[in-house]
Image (cartoon, rainbow, N blue to C red; front, side, top):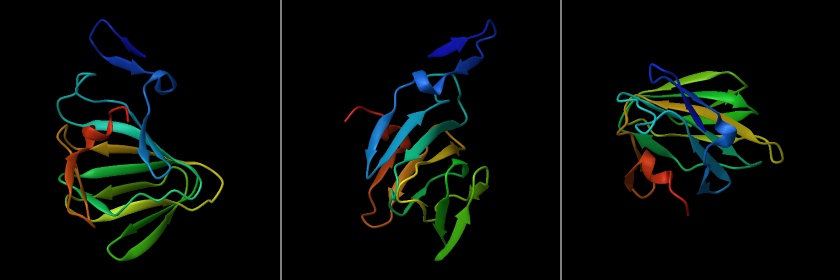
Length: 139
């Protein structure tokens, strides 16, 4: 649900928004996007089941990720960095990376922020590129 103020600001209630299955134990809830009214960035949550790992990928724009809950590993530049809740990352464009849930049983959740509404994700293994928003469809 999105609540609009008289100035067209928005209050989002994530528990009332649509969540999309990404596969591999990851689910995404888009938050601020073009439909809400932004012209310059997009945000959302991705939740990981225990043991979930997303594939190595890169984006065409800057990204910041905040670990909201759980314990995660960020794999980047051939190195591993352990994150705890509320740690914040900055990832420049075209840098291959991924996040892993370190717990086999407990969930992990990230808040992601891309610098523009045309953010893409390129999978490192296949080279396939698609808009981040393409993941926000029912499967």
